[in-house]
Length: 268
Length: 146
Image (cartoon, rainbow over all chains, first blue to last red; front, side):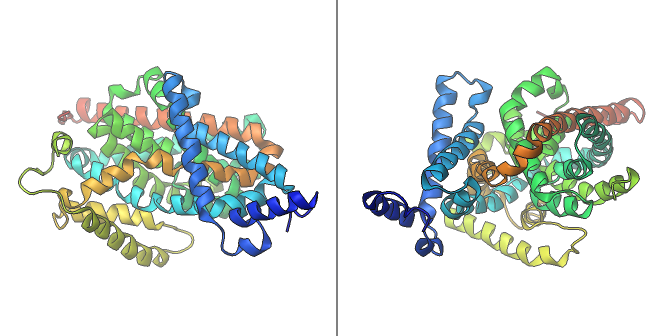
């Protein structure tokens, strides 16, 4: 019953829209999922269209456009309904968003397919893969720690930055365990994916990463999670396979290494 | 099928046609269900989420030839092609944490940007280093087919 201010005329329309979106007290329990699904598809499709007419300008990557535009639309609608963005997001967008989000489950296990397609590479380099991910993560943690310190994050902020190489569901509880804020860590994991999706091609070229396809795959899977793996699949079958294995192995490595690293640096 | 055959190194999808899409979805659903039963068995200090277990299970089933590529790849490749879109709700989820962004937002975004690049570059070059060692120190084969 947020929108009953204003004229009676406004109230009727507001109530109708509120019911439809599930933001009114009455509709909140049911939660109309169709708005979230519709909005997600529309902002993503607008992103694809912009990317096409923008001739592939990196800020027009559909995922990035979808995210920014989606948040902006929710922000404006929340203003119109006289509520704050977080509340409006939860009542109007989340039911539909959750349905799309659920499909990340089968999409993640699907990466076993590109992984298995290059099982020859996995069998040949399993030791190098394991060592590279452990050593690479350890080195990265030092850089991330000192970068965060230099930029002036507090202890909670630093601890929240350390587990981001893992998939969100692993990174969040680890962040809490080492004294970080799990919401910030979740945000970092999401931004990793968005950044790799927007800048991945450019970064791979700029740092000449693709000279070693095994390393390119492991790097993309570690830095960009499943979205990085999708990028790696586009680069080639070896890259796709290596990124898929990185998503799994790095998560387990983060499980083990990050709490010890946090102890070493006196964060906990 | 032609597109699948091209990238298909481990097995051929030529002899037998791909499984019907509902069967492929059924295999995914079964793996996810079993994974969701296994996931809570891990201790809270060592979390392993359902989809990660599912990925390992599907890989093991493929490697042991219990599940063939033709049973899962049509649906699996389709899901992978959707992954950027499936991430849109996660991106929009940041709408719920705008207050965190207001407090330390710019610093956090900068650190995450640095962290993403560092993870990509350091892991890629560490791997190149270990493969160099394999080749030049242990004199073992490093060639792979494209």
